[in-house]
Amino acid sequence: MHSSHPINIEALLTHVPLFNGLAPEEIARIARSTREIHAAKGDILFHKGDACNGFHLIVYGQVKLAFTSAQGTEKVVEILSQGQSFGEALMFMEKPYIVFAQALTDSLLLHVSKSAIFDELERDHNLCRKMLAGMAMRLHQLMNDVESYSLHSGKQRIIGYLLRELPEEELNGVNVAITLPTNKGVIASRLNLTQEHFSRILHELTDLGLIVVEGRKIHIPDVGKLRQLE
Image (cartoon, rainbow, N blue to C red; front, side):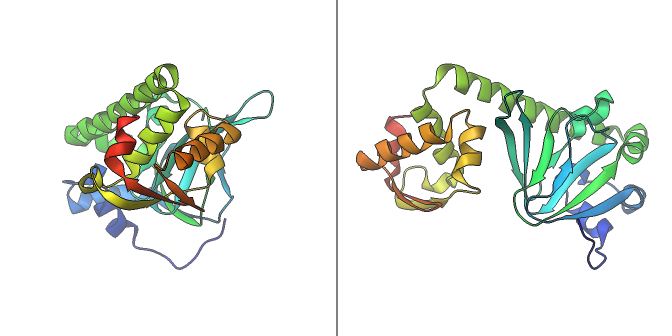
């Protein structure tokens, strides 16, 4: 990881939804305990078992959270991008990381220290509510994932994922296209599928005329027809 030109950490923190409503002096206090991390594609931000002494915010780029099984296979838990944060829950539990984090693209992150957040939480209960709401949303998403893995077929999972990537105004559109945020292997792991199974389902959907795959770009001729299979 390399450093680059200094950035205005206070200005960046001001645009983080979590810190909306904080006074400039509160932002300044948090900024003093925040460091920037420039990660090149492939860099490991932390390993499973490392101490968690704060949380990360993604200014730009993309990060995957994953763990490796005893057999050496990798399971992607989350794919995170600009504006998202991770590590808050473990920071509160004072536990080491249970996953590893790796940059999928060149990324800039901010690492906000635990001590700064704990100090601010004592002063501002509104921040406390926001952090709880953020963690509750993550928990809700994880519950949805578990339900999807348990109850939905691989085909339903992939269709659900593609529909989630669409802007709301295109949920009934025709001739729309989405670009997968990362490679198919990472997305397959995120959906609890092998890469082979993922590719096979894309072929099936292609044969049915429901999608056209062009590298990472997926064209959907008729979103309504695709939704009928969800």
